[in-house]
Length: 376
Image (cartoon, rainbow, N blue to C red; front, top):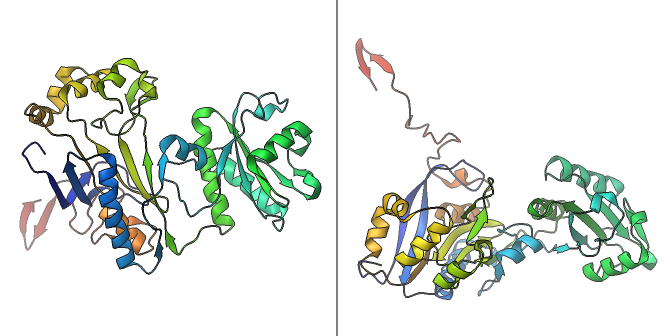
């Protein structure tokens, strides 16, 4: 953008120094990288939605949900789905019930943030199903427990905590969840900073066990309005996402708002619970950049030393610009119905980022062939 190119795209190999997981390979990966000058967030969405829709309809027989894709704020995503990469094929929604139980005498709910998941038509499920969900919650999701109730005829409640729910609380709970006869309500009570993630794992497991996921469709969404900053494990202000993103409200927001209240023009595109890419409207203004980094504890000298090329380039006047770079390997993983990204990579590295075919990287050792000794 600084050099005067107004837009570009490239399929670019990149390198990632991170641990491996099912949807992320260590070492090299490929991106469909694009950037545009004088572009807004919506400009990026308009271009990328057509690319994604056309790609997935061309190379898969599955249905692809029409664009424009839903826009979901980060805050709403964490509340309703317990994840910033929600699988919209799962119809279950998480709701906040903290206010309903603020005066409860039930010890497990006292001074806790409470989330509930209402599941319709579970009358045929046995007690074993509920016990297995409790086991999953405590053994795999990180919960201290998982309470539940069934809604029977006449709005009678049955279940592990039914006796702790009085008539007034029951009325408010049924209004909140719109629970009908034969529904079940699951309760997750924990600290505010952990309850969303736990509830999200339970939502996913309920969707899987009850066969609620439509495997014949691709559902995309955008996650928007990420916080610019978050608290680190040490309690210090740190960047939440991409430190080079434009803060919403610009310099005024950085100077007048509490850091944790500042949102950024950052966005993720998500498909079926897989994050395909992060993107952002870039912070192209050096004054803004210095202020943004100062809030996170960096000095101007730190920026000039750590990001010298970028900071120097922006001295010449970079235009406003925005972009995104979806992972090609992740797209292939979805298109081929693979659950592990290494299945679609020709020569994948192992979990230690080693290429076993090439034996690289490898410690130096001495090898002898036909009596000749050499070092590799």
